[in-house]
Amino acid sequence: MKPVWIIDDDRSIRWVFEKALMRENIAFKTFSSVQEALTALEEETPQVVVSDIRMPGESGLELLQKAKERYAHLPVIIMTAYSDLESAVTAFQGGAYEYLPKPFDVDHAVELIRRAMEESMRKETTAEEVGATPEILGQAPAMQEVFRAIGRLAQSHATVLITGESGTGKELVARALYRHSPRADKHFIAINTAAIPKELLESELFGHERGAFTGAQSMRRGRFEQAEGGTLFLDEIGDMPADLQTRLLRVLSDGHFYRVGGHQPIKANVRVIAATHQDLEMRVRQGLFRDDLFHRLNVIRLRLPSLRERREDIPLLAKHFLQKCARELGVEAKRLSDATVRYLSAQDFPGNVRQLENLCHWLTVMAPSVNIEVKDLPPEIRSDAATPASQSWVSLLEKEVETLLNRGDTAIMDDLARRFEKALIVKALSHTGGRRIEASQLLGLGRNTLTRKIQELGLDVGKDRNGA
Image (tube, rainbow, N blue to C red):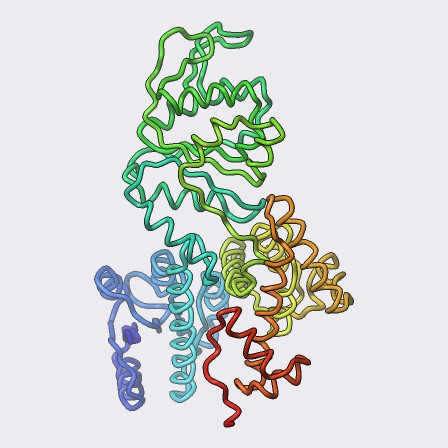
């Protein structure tokens, strides 16, 4: 633990603190002037600062200002005389942790220092946790697969297609692929092909020559040129117009392109990462997306899971977003009660991670207290609170069936029935502590039937704990 700094030009005050802190086994350093302390601050950081407000040379208020500029969370206790109320107000406005009137009670002073130390250590721990938080969070197996894929692609220049519902974090993954690639020292250029009008998109991608069209009064470099040597991220590629699909295919095929109105080929040394929330195979079958372009883009595919497929990550993500919003707004971070965490973990979040982040921002601004209960959630989230659990899981099942059908999967009944039986058996055995007779009774199965299904499903559930 770092030491407490005592700054006072009065030797007797320093002596009182030295004896009291030594008795409490609290590490300390004493200084007789602000300048002496500021010089030391260049080389080391205290846990807490206790400073007199009036001293020869620079004052304690000047020390407070400079210490706060360098270490925003450093608690600074300002000592002041009873009559010096104006200075006390100024100290608080400058960010002082507390002020200590002279003459003071030694035990009270030590207690105040201990509180400031605890506050300092708590903020350091929070800062370390926040600082260590990666840009992409996820403990769920599906996200760990994504992390592994990013790691395997670290030295690759291959084209990558990222698929997943809106709000799952496709651009974050694209940026992670870029940061860990051999092209990390060059530009990362992102463009949402669905957000730009068709008549402007060609110029955005490939640039244009002067006079190429009305209003083109000068030559303009497009995104491919801007990303030269680096990475170009094409978001919502599934919405790209057909004629531009042809131009993009040509660039990916031969590595050259022309500016709009240009006649000289330009070589493109760019890694393309594309993303879409749409089912590109379906769009190919519908004639809305070129089959040859799809195969050019689909060299490596990363599928991002929806938030409802990784519900175990919701508490982690919510805590991260609440802390992030609190930092941005300069307020204390809100905390979710256990009941609220359970409730949010059961929600579908059709907007996925982006929806959860927006919810956390709303809670940071609108929730009446630091501890957030279910009743504090916005009405549109709470509207599902009265939905019976039976309807809730049936709704989830219906959505899963819809996803599988849209994806073109076959043998859906067998797949879902197998997953359903597996979930029932695993949960029942967990509930009974591995006792199969009891689990079979709860499930309404014979013990032999349960044993056979465990074998057929390849479940690793350990030995029968019935003792028979």
